[in-house]
Amino acid sequence: MSATVDLHTIHTYQFPTRIRFGSGARTELPHVLSSLGIQRPLVVTDRDVAQLPWFASIMELLADFNPAVFSQIWGNPVVSQVESGLAVWRRHAADGIVAIGGGAPVDVAKAIALMVNHPGHLFEYEDGNPNARPINQPIPPIVAIPTTAGTGSEVGRSAVISDDQTHEKKIVFDPKLLPCVVLADPDLTLGLPSKITAATGMDALTHLVEAYLAKGFHPICDGIALEGISLVAQHLVDCVQFAQRLAAGGTLSDREIDAHLLARSGMLNASMMGAIAFQKGLGVTHSCAHALSTVCDLHHGLANGVMLAAAMRFNLPTSPDRFLRMARLVNLQATDGQAFIDWIETLRDTVAIPATLTKLGIPKDTIDRLVEVALRDGCHLLNPRPVSRSDFYAIFQDAFGS
Image (cartoon, rainbow, N blue to C red; front, side):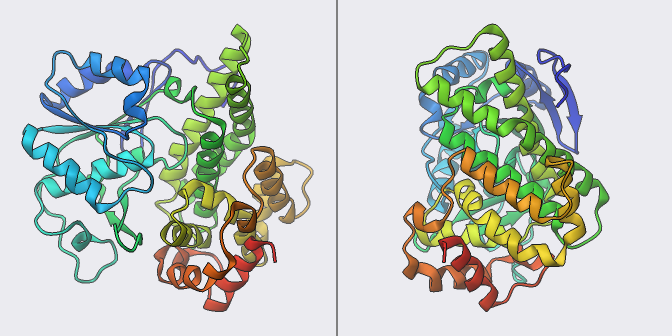
């Protein structure tokens, strides 16, 4: 992001979601709801966001509406949270959804919206299931207000929801799940703790890298992915360091406040760009991360951050030219793709993401289960290099540090 950008101007993007981006964009919520004809919104958020002071200020914006709040969301979202939210929707007789938060509440909001007019169980609509029910009924409008810079779910066409018992992730996909409007306000990310900033930032980076490497021809997504990688390289470390200073009780000068907003704006854009780009596809990192979330209930962004370097070492021989192009985004003097993997490892260490699964406390005896779940995950099917069972073992062993 150019340092000359006016951070206090609200910009409009459309890919195809209408995105209002800029400091204070959240204040446009009443106008957006009115334009969509929403009078009784269901506000879907997580239990931590619901306790933040600025959440109360957003609810004050809804004084002329009749809102209900569903905030019983935490961790990796599960079906029971969707069902509970749907019950609140029905009791309130809601006519639209405002999703506020990171990937979990936005995904739950999409799943609630889907089930409003569709019968049966949510997983009967799983993407890729040859016997899936059709998504052919109206879906109520969703307005999304992201509060993290990682999943980019606010501009995505899918919801990722886990089974309560097995923790296995299922993907529900349809273009109609796209929010109608996104109010992308970097102000809401300024107070994110450094650990969440780092994990979500590595999630965004993983989306961008895997989208660029994914099989298939999609130069529009490729271009978006490359610019997004550049934004992460420019801004993630600054975001984490500002968060660390604030957590330690430090104060920021006016100039540093502007720099912090610039960095957060860059990462919020990078996050949305990652989700837009990965409509091209993802790859083996995500299959491994989904397995870690299923087996070990690990935060998705953190799982991606730990797995990314090992997965890219596996991919490098297949895509040396693409790796070199990414390397030159972060180091103009790079002469080979290994420089990009070296940069990933340096970035990971700088933002305090554990270098190995062992350092993260993942037991080595989970590897058989991790491989089985990763093999079933569909993301690796678009990886640039085919991934066999033995390959998954090797990638996980690399990530364990052995």
